[in-house]
Image 1 (tube, helix red, strand yellow):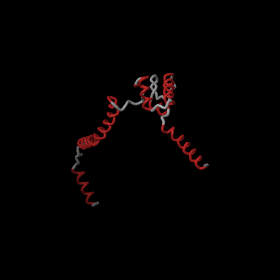
Image 2 (cartoon, rainbow, N blue to C red; image 1 turned 135 degrees about the horizontal axis):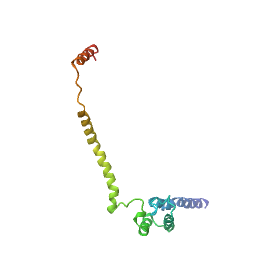
Image 3 (tube, rainbow, N blue to C red; image 1 turned 30 degrees about the vertical axis):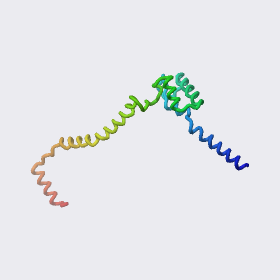
Image 4 (cartoon, rainbow, N blue to C red; image 1 turned 60 degrees about the vertical axis):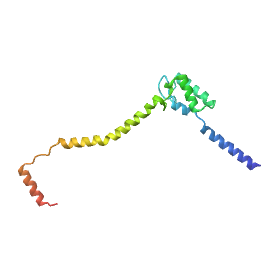
Length: 147
């Protein structure tokens, strides 16, 4: 009897430890949103509007709503400006794709630019002309030190 009671209590303790990890926390949503008045992340803002939004989020987290439900309610109530990052759909997808494309194009352009710089540098400086006296001295030195 004691053993089965201990197992049941252990299961309840494990379930209680896992349950908060499965649910959404207010802090997670605070990091994904921003204050509409001071334009700072909600987790560091203390403006009156931020405090209202924090309360709005806390009430919904207490009700057990999902993160998507809470974010949708925030957008419906306060507008899309409350989101810290643009959604990854529709026209806002451009804000995610363009930087990636620019990085890829920039990395692809590196070999072409460096080759152009190398050719330009090699063509800029003509070989210096050497006088016949210096040429004779150079030949003498090269004969003395074969190498």
